[in-house]
Every structure is written in structure tokens, then in C-alpha cells.
Image (tube, rainbow, N blue to C red; front, top):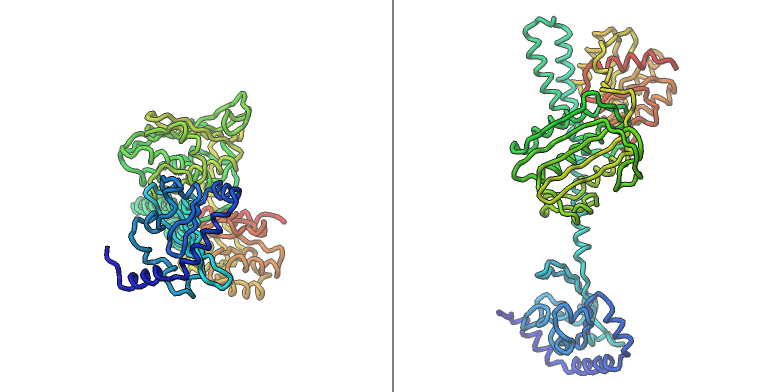
Length: 532
């Protein structure tokens, strides 16, 4: 081993220090006369504790320190710390106690990962006499493996949150682009007869834009933390949507099967959270089949006659919609199955899973007053069963605003959107159906127009995410001018987003971007016709 001249010089100086030898004998005397009770207390601690002299020779070590090197105490005392812990013939090059005396008064902290994979933090603390001279060193080693694991998980969670914020910003801008594609294709179709040969090409453009909208919606669902936006929901429709996404994202060697009950009862649920639930369960099944297999999704109306209603048994009596997601993968052992819903628990390799997917799925189900169960056996696959309370008498719920023929009017509408393409499109669509449109490119301009001509404005269509004042502040300011103002929010974010974009019901309507023009026009008509 190469020893630098500086190390040799310092080592020789330390060895030749008579004062250090005197101090060593003083420290030894103190330790020899220490009570057995104090030694028992130190032996009971989980930390590794050692006392060393200024030459780094170990004078005492507690039971945990001896156990960590698999030696008895008499085999540890008298050894040099660098020899015992590091296997070196000389003190560690980075040891601060090789420095000048003025630099030896602070504690030195070092982390080391041992061959068994555990990480230890060792804190070396100098013992000083009344004159400030170092007479010994106390070493305290602490197992920080679990702390480091949690820190790593926290960093991954923060990274996911940052990625979600980025995804949300990208999706918002992309939504505006898709809105222009959607809207202009609709206007083209309105102008053409159904026999026009161009109609087929236009509808293909619409279809591609709709597919892009679904991907954008997934980004938005991932990026935001939302309150539940409960509504009657056709789970078969949500399942078909998720399967289209899965077919684009999972390996081809995984076959996807769907078995749906035709007249499936509706559930009162948040569409975005239901999509997230299905995706998490399906992706968990995908990961269980690295070499291929079958992913099967089933929906059924289910009546439960009896049950305790706890998380590990049959749900309480009632009518439910049952969603079953199963795979032919490797399955799970009982001890793994007990932990699958725990946050951050994962059997995947480092960097290939956060351990949050199934925990999030369980929370979604609980938030919807439902129940989730898992069946699995090593080598025989896994099945998740989700029970959601059903709404009797509601079957195959669809969004009427997307299918009804839009109606026009002659009212005046203040249209506020910072994207010129969206603003021009919606102005043209509204004008085509008879409305008088006043455009504004930001919140400040819209508020100025409303203050001057608010008595002429029957409705405000307001984009939520804009530079400057922004839609939220603009809405509040408009309502200060006219508390009874009718405002429809148009945004790529949920009406019940994390920032409460619905502003506690102050807006009279909400249209999600990208939307078809029929949906927007029908919403406008409904809000205008709604009597105060």
C-alpha cells in the first residue's frame, strides 16, 4: 500500500506525542473505574459504540460493536480502529483527527455500505480535557439502511410529482392544439353533405384527434390530484377506453380479453379515477407476465347477500358492479400477497417500480365506498376483484351533450382564450349558430370589456389557464362587477381540480378541452336558458 509523505509525517508525529500517551492512561483509568451499570446500558443499545485513544487504539467496545465484527470484546480491545473496521495498516486518509489540533474539535460523520447491503453511519466525536486538548475519541455507529431506503422512495415520489407537473403543462398546451383540430373538422362536416367524398377523410382526422385526446387525458389524470368528480358512469365504456390504451402500450405477447355484461348497471364514480384504477391493475398484471400471457378484464352485475364489510371479506349486502382483472402470470406467495397494498412495497428491481400502483388503486376503491380483494397463488396467476356500489335503473349512461344536435341563439358572448387558434375557431362556431361574439385574448382585456359593456354580455366563456391574470382571478373580478354573471369555464383540467377551479359553483358550466363543438354549444345553450 502506498503511503504518502504527509501521512508518514503525521503518523510519526502522533506516535511520538508524549502528551497523548499521558492522556491515554488517564482515559484508561476512567474507563477501568466505570461502573458495571453504565457498561450494561451501553451494551443494551443497538448502536455500535467504541472508545479510542488518540492513537486510534480501541480501549472499549459495546456488545453491538463486537458483534458487528464477529469477535469477543477481548479480541476487539487493543486493536486499531482502521485495522479492525477498514483492514488498513494506517489511519484512513480522510480521517479528520490527522489534522491540526484546531480542526479536531468537531464530530466526523461517515457513511459506509457493508457487504451485507446495510448502510452504517459512523459519528466520531473527540473527547476534550478542560484545556481543550483531545484525549480520546468516541465512535457511534448507527444502522441507517431503512432511513436511506425511505429517503430514496421520497426522492422518487418527488420526481414523480415533478414529472406530473411537467406532463400537466404539456398536456394543457397540446389540448389547445387538439381543440383546433376537433373544431375545424366539425365545422367542415357541418358545411358538407353526408354524401360528400371528403367526409370520410375528415372523419379519419377526427378519429386520430380523438385518440390523441385520450392520451392527453391520461397525462392530465397522472398530473393532478383531484377531488372526486362523481357522476353516473358506464363502466363498460371506461373499460373499452382503457383497453384501447393498453393495446398501444403493453407488449404484443400479452393477449387482452374483455368479457362485459351487456346491460351493466351504472356506478357513481369519478371517470379519471376509474381509469387510473383500471390502468394500475392492468399494468400490475402486465408486469407479472414478462414472457407473455393473458390479461382478462370482466364486468358483471353482482348481488351480495351477506358479508361483514371489512377489507378482507365479502362486501356488505347490496348490489354492486364487479370488475375482475386477472392474469396468467407468475402469481404471488402468501407473504407477498399480504403486503401488496402497502405504499412503496414492490417486488420489482430498483428503478422499475415505485410500489404505489396498488396502494393508489386501493385508495380509489375506498374513496368510492367500494371493496377490493386479491386472489393469487405462486405459478397460477393473480386476480383482483373490485366491488363498486351500483345505481339501479341506470344502464349504459352516455354524455347527452356529445350526441344531441346543438341549438343556436342570438345572445352576446364574451369569449376569453389566450390561444388565437382556439379563439378563432370557437368564435366562428358560435357565430355560425347565431351568437354575437366579443373576443378577448387575456383576463385583463376581458375584464376591461366587461366593465365597459357588461350589460350587453349574456354569457362569458372563460379559459382557465392563461398568462397574466388567469381565468380564476378573471372570474372573481367579473363576479365583483356583476354577481349574477353567467360564466362557462373551458379548460383541459377538471372542474373540480386541486385548486378548486370550479370556484365553489360560481361558474355556471364547465366544458372540458378538447371538446366537440356540439358539446360546447349545448352547454352554452343550457346555461343561457337556465333561469336564475
